[in-house]
Amino acid sequence: MLKRLLILLFLLSMLSACQTLGERQRAQSLQDILRRYEATMRWSSGQQASKFKSTEHVEMEVKPARKDIKVTHYEVVQGPSMLGDMRAVQIAVIQYVFQDSQIVKEITDQQEWLYDEESEMWYLNSPVPVFN
Image (tube, rainbow, N blue to C red):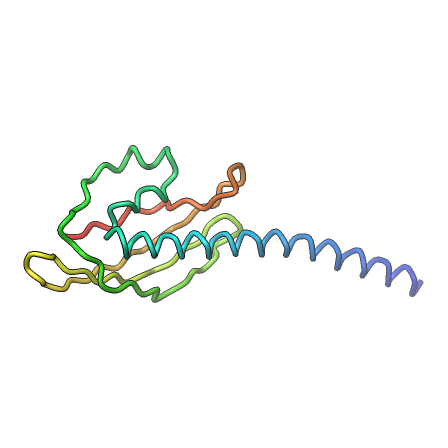
């Protein structure tokens, strides 16, 4: 009886280890994409942010990005938080300046990220921030 219980516990622990490995890989993939998104926001001032959206959502959002801004600060204030296995949210505050007037402004970027199992990629499902 004890031997069966030990075998059952061993099998259950192996099953849970496989599941957590997949979750760990997905979480690491999310961290990687969030770092790339932050770097893109900082260095391209949001002009390249739409490349993080899935191809079906990029066409829906055609807003010309302003070229006269410079992102001065990007700070994650909440998250990333997993909402199930395939959805994550994060909130960041972005400070930027209009280069011609040198006025500092701030926006809150509420991001929703969805995981696509087929491509094994995270995609931005929320609107790209608009710098006004």
